[in-house]
Image (cartoon, rainbow over all chains, first blue to last red; front, top):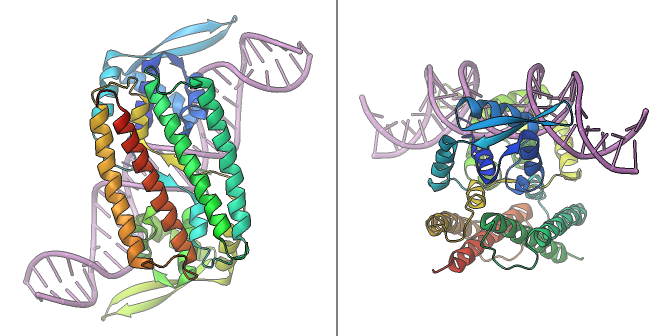
Length: 182
Length: 182
DNA sequence: CCGCACATGTAAAGCGTTACATGATTGC
DNA sequence: GCAATCATGTAACGCTTTACATGTGCGG
């Protein structure tokens, strides 16, 4: 019910690239993957335990310093097979976007509403900052490379996120300039 | 916690336009607003009761036929004030997107993966259908009108959704043609 | 030695979907 | 009469976020 544990497959995909600790997975969600899926450590740690029970992953313990134990998880054959059938399966459900700002716009009935310019400018600032972050990230990871053979998937989704943000900003700019007496 | 009951404000916004029954609100989510937020009747009816307890809305009973009682809800002064401060408040959180397809792309490491063309074509079909639906909707609601003074918010978010879908489709098309030996 | 990042968990609560449940109205 | 739609609810379950909780390692 609810949704269908997509998070599990994301974790499998990440562990398929290389073994990781729960903490490192959490970082990935905070940075890399965060454009397309969000998850906190409080969701990740219990899920890792459940996935290990199901035989999708295993872990080995690393000791850092003198005491600190890290659990480094890796994907099993069974896990690799589950990942593969997820990727190969049809994806009939569209992306769901929950955009609070756009909803607020819906309830602004009149084009001359005094709040509109401020609301739009606020969003422009937020999305501009995000776009800058994404561009820096692409530069860092791929430089001026055009279409890398390696890490192709990563390149793809960064490109997707960049295109999306650029379009969102364009749209906001356009709406701002088209407002009455502005 | 979790999220901050945005649904509540959407309902207030809809009731601010005109009084509605729970059933009608459910229809609105299935059609109008469904592009931007989803909600089932099982979430709506309990929330209406809670909102009435809080004094944000009230209802009067209509009898259809001989027995069937409908509860028609309307917004109160208090509700109108809550709605207004929501719209006026900053919206610091960006839209969150959950896109299962793009995630799958992330885990396709190589550009020559045999599954890619099929995966992308499937998404093109889905998004094309959605775009057609949105265009029909704009035509129906606004015809060839350019920027309506009335229903401005509705026009805005429809335009936003259209722009977004168009960009998504462009991106998919571009990726498909740029695949190796294709 | 202090602060920040690293590292791993659990608890509580709300959000959201699917399923269960019931009955009335309307048009054919 | 029968089916589709109108109309209103509850229950169960899983997903997601926020908060609570604890301890180690490392660099300045």
